Length: 321
Image (cartoon, rainbow, N blue to C red; front, top):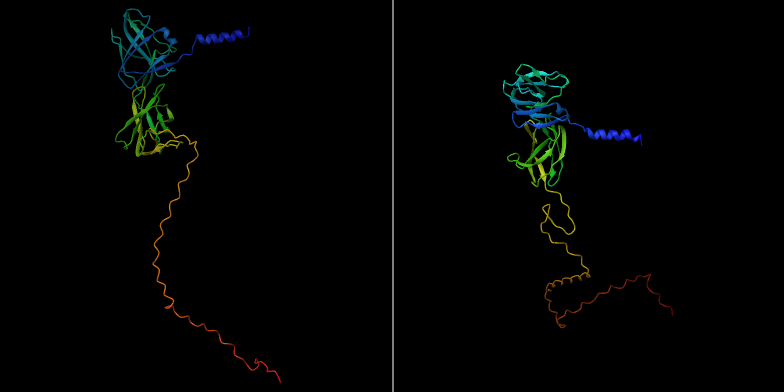
């Protein structure tokens, strides 16, 4: 029993202190950022804002300050190993800080200057950021592989690659289809993507033809958009169907409203139909008249071969008297 006690205490402590996420990514809808900085934010994930804008306005509300706040100062660094750099500050009596960062990641927090000139909440090297700002002006780079000849109503794999560091936690891309070599496009759906090589299934529409193309459109959290098209057209073949017992198929698709299959006959099979009647014989040629006996030709005498000639040696001897 006492041996199990430390193990139970570990489970209890693990449930009381859940694993904390480091950052929560968000897409910044505009150019203004409002954040609250307090000593209790160490228990929460730091918000991470993605934007493509360069001119930003930041309002940092710092808890536990005196009422005689004159201005707010922005502190930032580009990695957790760098020291904090003093940035721009708000005008006296104004809460907004004008910030024009370069492209990249910026860890930010603030401090306040009171009316008497003293400054509070200056960060030390170990201080945690109040929020993270990611300025991304580079659109994703996409390479779309040629799908080859495919059959309609199937879901083959579509291979493509995406390079971008700001796709966010659950990035997606839109798949578009053209049946006329890019003259017009229709949206097929949304695919889940990730940075690097991708292979995902897509639903082939029932649009058989040889002038088909695909286009993939991807947007990152900062709002940058890019697309890629297949380098040449491909062919969609008719759907593959298999003939089932009692069903009929027309042009590769199952016939609608097909009649139910007829039950198997239980009665003995019907007798075979009679053989077709023979064809009528062709009319015979007319017979010639037979001549009368008187008019019949007289029989010709048969000639017998003459007796063999006798020779003196072969003559019979006469009896002697």
